[in-house]
Length: 493
Ligand code: ADP
Ligand code: MG
Image (tube, rainbow, N blue to C red):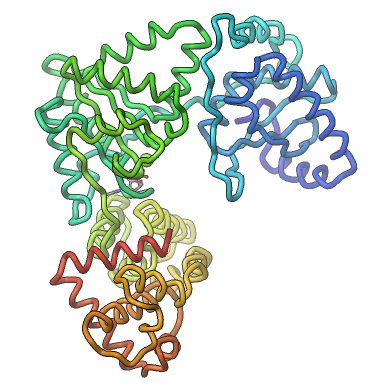
């Protein structure tokens, strides 16, 4: 989001030229002073909740660059505090003409919003609204404008039609369908969808919301509120700040279906959790439907209050499992088809073998291939796939070592890691060893002889046999296939 007008090219050039100049020290001092004033201006609560994570990115001509770890934060801070930040900077340094706020995940640290504390009756949150008026930019920085808005709440692409169903997600899909057909039906309230990142939780939630809104047009309208837990918190805090919590409560309690995405975000946010708990109870008691998603099952969401955890598990809990090879192929076929691009089966097989972590990454890889093919007006081939996805694939290879695989697999089946190289051939040892070889073939770029060497100097034909054996077994034994996919998922995460 940009509060000034510079072309991207200019931006880049200037950031480069200035970021390593001697102005940096100066800039840091100014930033420290601006931060202090900001904190004074908006009060502790808001500062800690929204502004503390803003990092100085550098100066870009006469435009300042600030960084935040998520797009959500960027949008919110730009909208609510952009003008104020510019005004305070200008007071500090009149040469500043605008501020650009970018989303850039800080490496290694997960974005972690401070828990808002309930402001005391006379909480310092309130004065900021007046304070902001004083800093109105109209006179000071006429170029300032708000360009991007919060993204629309529902993604058009996320419907039941576009959701590809396979073994790992068929149960969650069926539950979602059921709830979309008859919300608040006995046994499905709340519907709790969980699974790792990029496996389709948000997609299913949006699909439910679309279905409800399209079907309710003729009949009595069904009101649906969908929001991320992060958004829930932001709206709650905003209500506190504007002293409109009653409106907030009433609004939420008047919907027929409430959907909260990524509930794990509320861990450690006790006040917001408390508010959510009351909303939850009020809605369920009134016979309304709740749909929740999270990255773990209710019982594994440690850090949530026990009473909330218990209630979350009371309806239907459905897991989106790690993808299987078959599902990945079906998804690639569906997406290529939709995009109207011909992708050879060999390329899809290659992608489905290599990109196993989640559907988002798989989709990303396919999109990149398709974009490349369009741009250069070329066919998608195995060669272009290697070329275009070179970096992605290398990243996958680099992450996983045979030692790690052996360790994980041994732990999983509770055998000693030394058995990976031992000569013992009893089934309970040999099978895990074969799985480890299989995973080594799938997840690393090591050759068969190389892999054999890591397993007590076995011959490459032994490795080949192991790969074939595991592949065959996975098609006939679902529990075994699940074990192997689980291991793969753990190794890749
Ligand atoms: P999550 O919320 O679990 O992190 P998303 O729902 O955002 O994951 O899914 C990530 C991407 O993968 C989205 O673009 C989504 O459309 C796509 N996707 C996930 N599951 C499926 C599926 N079963 N069929 C088609 N696309 C899917
Ligand atoms: Mg999601």
